[in-house]
Amino acid sequence: MQNKYITIKQASKILGVSPLTLRNWDNNGKFPAGRHPISNYRVYKVEDIEELILQMGVRINDKRPTKTEIKKLIVKHLTD
Image (cartoon, rainbow, N blue to C red; front, top):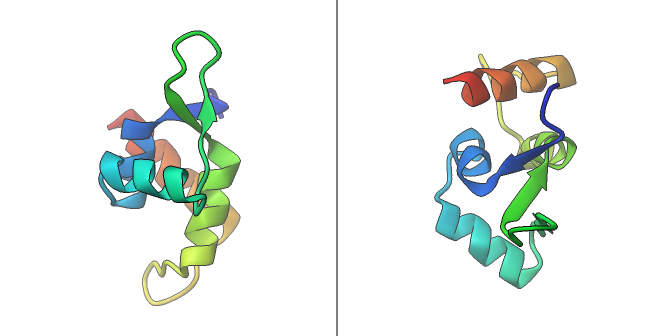
């Protein structure tokens, strides 16, 4: 995967929640974000997004997705 970190906008699109929800999760410690060293914007590790999707119990075609399927889903959303 090209980007090790993704923006809050990209993460919200992948997870299907608003950026405000991700900010609230970060502030409450439910899903902490990293910070960009220069701009101090919130950034998320792709691996953390993958893990959260697995924990959320997301189903694709009535079955749990594999890590490979999750990576494909993330790449698809990042290229749209």
